[in-house]
Image 1 (cartoon, one colour):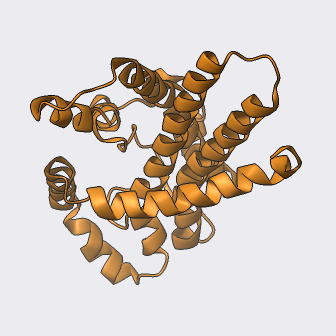
Image 2 (cartoon, rainbow, N blue to C red):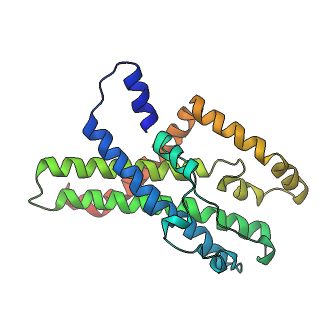
Image 3 (spheres, one colour):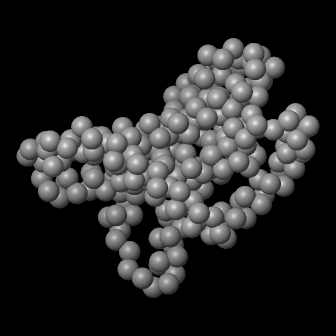
Length: 230
């Protein structure tokens, strides 16, 4: 994301300003439209499983003002992955707290993957519509490429099994209550360590490797309805 652009500028490498602008537009679209969808998915799933805390607090909404965390949004702009304001969930309202908490957490990353798949399908639609100028087609396609990449990276990042990310709740379904309490006791320190890893770039390769594998699968799925056109 923009952190790579900054590094390129500092190293004296050329930067395509139009490409950067398209990238920023894709990031802003994700921040204002997809992050609320991610959090809304958490709240919706929790409500379906018996906990109406998010609904009572007005968090089952696509209003970006209810979901945007400034620092998390900045991380998305800089690195391509980050977070929003967590949806309030009361696991005591669930019939099976550990299982239902895991399903509620999983709903967010799944919404990102579905959003990425929708973007890939729309990107393919562009190539079968006649009459679109090649220049416009190129930049719209670049926008969708960034959009898909950010959504996939958000899904992969949020599935890291470290608190407070969604992956920690998924992992929690497989831990004993005693292990779970010990796991979350150090949440604040783990969060600080995670931010350090983000800024150091040590997470770049493993996250990129996983995100590329997931992206390949999404592009393959999105191509299936269009095989007759290729």
